[in-house]
Image (cartoon, rainbow, N blue to C red; front, side, top):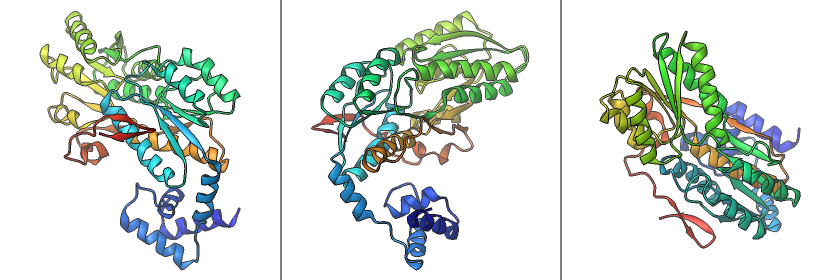
Length: 368
């Protein structure tokens, strides 16, 4: 064990915190309380420990690393948070000399092929990508990796490709958790349905499969009567949910496996099903609070979008600048949001409106 690693372990033990918390304190990153940071720095000073940040910064600057980012701007409620993690990590790394080429696409699966090709042709060293079109992107990712361009997928994967890593909440586990919750919230023999985004997308398909597995295991004689695709379109999701409720008026539960839950909530209200159908959603944003309070949303599966963006950029940058090994996958643990713990999540801690969408300005994405 080298001297620096030994020092970090010792500080973590003395401060009774994780090694990751020590790393954030020593490198000036966010995500920890000021009091905790101060205590860690005092301990580091006490034992005479100091990471060689100047040498690291010099190493990064000499490498002249350029990273491209291709993530959707919409749906706002999820991707605003994902971009927030990306941009905060970029800000830290830009101070060390890493350059970023941010190319947001409008929606998942729209324009990502063209943007990916543009980023490769521009000479970037690595790309952070949401793979909305995994089948079409796979040969392009493979070609980029062969050229030495590292590709890290975030949120949704291109599993058949040779991409270097994926950062996400494992979608099958995500769906299984939602299925278990639903199975324990409804009576045996209940009928439920799924509102998905696009089943051609790895993330949405695996969540659907996981939900089916979890629900049928935990709800004796339960039935999944329909899986509809809303294609991340609010009007389409509203219309298809309304039609679903019209066809199956005895529906007991609905699972929305993307963040696009507001049109489903509105359809329940329009059909007079508010509070009568158990609704399990995905992720969290401020506009969902009233639906929790009215018991329209029973629970939501939280995917840590801010953390996903932060981790994806950090892993890729550490690999390109310091040759740190990229794990094949970095899976975050899903969380369960209910009305009781709603206030604890970052999306609820601010009374301000949600951040505006990322916009292109020169070579970086900035907040409008």
